[in-house]
Length: 540
Image (cartoon, rainbow, N blue to C red; front, side, top):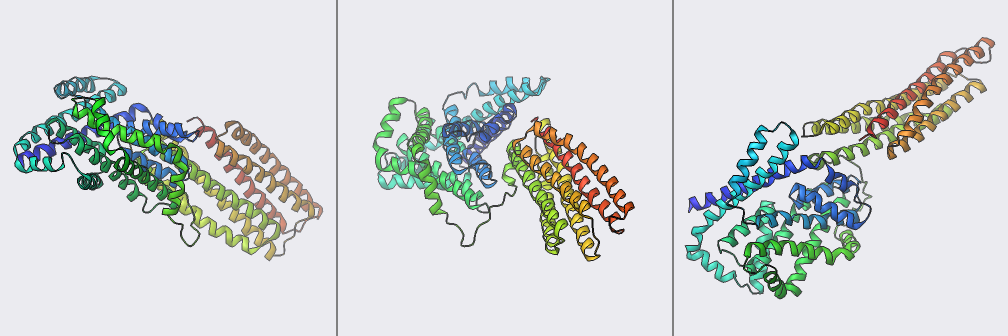
């Protein structure tokens, strides 16, 4: 008995390993095209479904796609309606593995692995190596199927196994519900619907399962795979929790429809599609359930979104949706970088707001402005550190050269953004000192300070838009404007010295005026560096 168990477990392990090898290689070959498709999936629902199919076809796990979507929703990168479409597509994409396993490639599997391994070992190019790895993983999957079928062969002679087959082979309503619950429970523990479909196909090849048993098990598997996303959203925002609930609602809705309406039609239909080929019937059952549920639920997406709103109630206190970086996204570097870029924009806006606050302080000398700036600086430093730690973790993943360059750009720009906040505090402190020491500027000097500050605020407004839109032309205009800022600062300095020499300004204002315009000019320099960052990042 132990030999049988170890053989089945060994085969299941090989199947799972083969799926992982295929996944890693497909992700490299695809060069993040699936991820870019996911980012662009907001155009319409059909595009969202297509994105879900493609991404799940690459990563081989619908739960992984759903977790990725949950992370994007949590980061504010995707709406719930978009997420619902992607989740429906993921349900279809996950059936690809089952369809592959239904082919009887077991005898060819060792040859496939052997030939692919030769290309992998002796090829000079990465693309050929990763393509060969796809076939290595493909072959290992079927070798795993061989071992599972060999391990299951003796089970046919065991009375207890055959007794169970007699009990559940033609299930009544009670047995039907029990099989659904078994599929749900096992998938919740194993967390791989593709693996369980493979095990069922191996069982069908040995006559250890009937189609009538397989259909409710498959429905249970589809509901059970939702538990991964539900679990992953436990610490996420309310919106992300709703995305996980929507996934569960889709599959529950499809299960209830089959149990109440289609239970007595689906088996006959599957037998008609693939007569005398039970493994293919199982694979088709998996595909038909997910495809049918998607077609039926497509007009009801907004209904499911609304139901999720009721099932995941808002907290009594106002819930603040923060765009915290989600560690789940680290497994998909392209999306992790897109999320980080959004956080860099949020960091920049916070720093820019500090500069605007300093403008009010320069004009009014209000102590409250300085307190606000210091509080904001503490938050900004924490967020900057979070971004840097996240990017360092991402750098340890298997990322492309282009992704590494983007990562370095974002690591570098956070320092310039934080420095603007520092300079804003410096401006406020100078203004408070000016007020406390009764230092007065002439009307012309005060006008110069205000106009200079407003000119830089204009640069900030343009730069904010350039960052949001990755607009290279606008960023280039900021670089040329910064050169003018330097000329303006020099002219202001000369005019103030002239005013001092004529006695038009308080003698103590000289150093104070120069320090103020120096700090503002340094802000413009950092804005120029952020503009250069926008130009570079827009290339990717």
